[in-house]
Image (cartoon, rainbow, N blue to C red; front, top):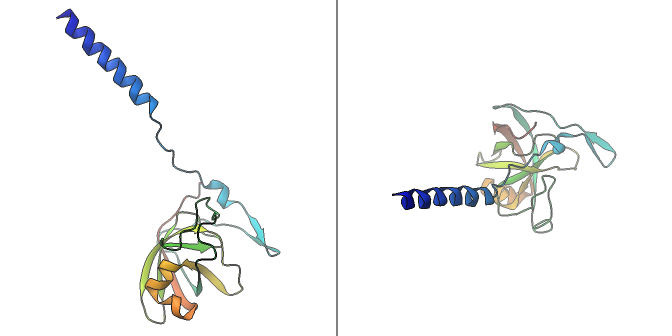
Length: 153
């Protein structure tokens, strides 16, 4: 009986230390992406957004020239992922993008800054552009709707 208790205690202590040896991946703190920044002589000040916030304007898309490069959020750009670049909305914000010409929609996550072309409000990944028919025209009017605000703390 004493031997059984010793093994049980030994096993529990071993499991405790084994559990302590595994690191859990911390959630990235993207608060640095909410700092004002300058691009082409213009200062941009990121803002907090709320669910159902909307914005209407022109969208464009970016593809293979940027594939694999680091985005403003620090992750690598994947042209086949459902992501977008926005000048001021928090990283991680989930948006619905509607092409106002054909009413096709996609859901994407903000992970980069841009576009830095006058009159455009969002740059879409190739995957998003293809889903909403933006890949053919290159530029189209869209409506963005926030589904889930991103990390702005």
